[in-house]
Every structure is written in C-alpha cells, then in structure tokens.
Amino acid sequence: MSRTGKKPISLPEKVDVKFEGLSITVKGPKGELQRTLPNGVSLSKDENFIFVKPINEKRQSREMHGLCRSLVANMVEGVSNGFTKKLEIVGVGSRAQVKGKTLVVSAGYSHPVEVVPPEGITFKVENNTNVIVTGPDKELVGNEAAKIRAIRPPEPYKGKGIKYQGELIIRKAGKSGKT
Image: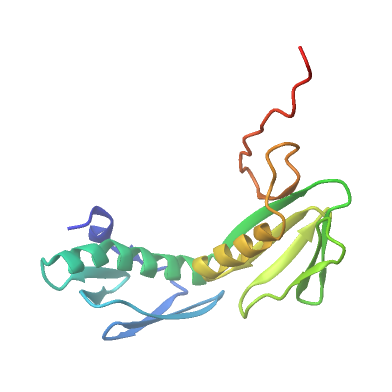
C-alpha cells in the first residue's frame, strides 16, 4: 500500500464532497471541481474524512492508490484555500499588465504576447514584473504558469526572461578573453 494513500483526507467545514463511483465533485468557497478517478481505487466518506483504498493488490491498483489520494486532497485544498504560482519577469523593458482578464506580456518581442486565462484562473500583476496566477485547480494553475514562463524562458548568461519566484537559474560564464 502507498504511504501517501493510507493517510485520510480531512474535510474543512465549508467543503462539500459528493461521489458516485469514481466521479467526485468537491464544492467550497473558492469554487467547484469535478474529476473522474482512474479504475483501481474506491472512495469512502466518514464524517469529516475521505478515505481512498485500492480495490485489490494488483500492481495497477497500488499505483493508482497514492495518485488518487493526492488528486482528491488537492481538490479539497483548492476549493478551500486555492493555489498560487508566482513568476518574476527579469530584463530591461520586460513587463506585464492585466487588461480585463487577459495578461499582456512585453518580453522583448516585436509584439506583446496576450495570455487568456481559462475559467477559474485569475492573473494579478505587481510592480509590472511580478505575475501571480491563482485558482482552485492545482494542475490548471501550474499549466498556466508554465505557459507564461514559456513565453520567454530565463537564459543562463544574464538571467533575463520569465522565471518562477525563487527559481535558481544556473549562470554560465560568457566568452573569456585571450590570456
């Protein structure tokens, strides 16, 4: 059995969970998430806890056990607290701004790049160089942050580009002069 999968998932007061078979719906103050879990696991609810158990001891059930527990725990966490990814834009003239719901990034190209958020995701910009991506779905928040970072990934010589906050960019030495 998975060590992660054995842990029960505690439900906050404001979160409501419904499941039919392998389809689970979680509602909370930050929104509603729905997901169909893969075969090989079963869900059970006991007052303020959700338990994920493998159906049998076959390899696929054991593989899916910890994964499904993490997916459900992330859904509960997302609808109660939400998830956040922070990005930094480094470079002269590089900046971002929000127009309506759309994020407009000027990252050194001949044109600004517009990023339209999917439903449930919001963008916030601080100081024209810090972008904050928030939403209830951890997977979607991470994907949107990765799309923004992919506009201009950080380069190793001067460190210019869009990077995650706290990301360490390993720097390379430039050309060395004649010795």
